[in-house]
Length: 276
Image 1: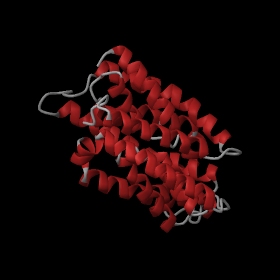
Image 2: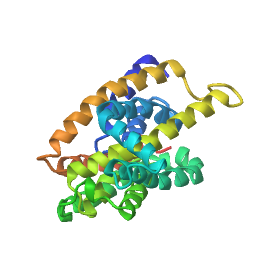
Image 3: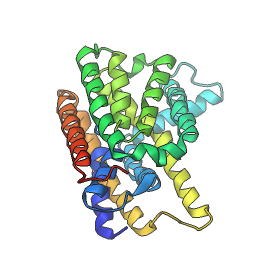
Image 4: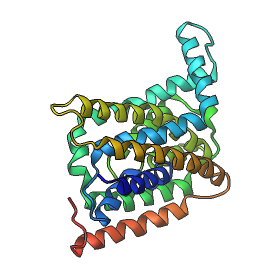
């Protein structure tokens, strides 16, 4: 991987990780459009550490309160504390993606990266997001979050193991169907992603460093550059998106996903893009 490629993919990761348009799909598509090799699931997982670092920085006060309250709950203190409860809900909501990610790791890294699957997911799940945005009551806030709802968010997040679904899009869609406001669904989506994304990225980094050939499949210099760029761009996108959701809908993202998905299907069908 070259340095220019790393810069482009880092910007793409930062721009798309938190918007409901699927960062993994865009990383896959950009590489194909420029004639670059598929960066692979390992590269994607590792550079997502950068965008999750942006979440840690942006929500640092909330995360600190949650961690302190959760640790207190382990010692039998702060029972009923909403921050401690949020800590447990993040753990519960993270279970589905951990289990399914381990069970289907091979398919995630190979079969599911087919551009036809990516394009179909972009279109299909955009329609689900549009429906949820239309019918959701948007009356619930994070203080209304329950264990069953947290598990529901978790399974929706696990759908993002398929490129084209979108981690934020899947969890926000679930939140809208459950009656949460756009901003509340997005905020929980960002918090819920922290254990899963950091865990996946660190696991992939560990595998690359301790494999039969250390670092095989990962060009560490460009990968680290892309990770840092993703952090900077992602931090700006989080701030913008949360402000936007106070007044805007998801319709622009739905339209974009449909147009992009149909365009990819057309280019693959015409032989311009290779699906695998």
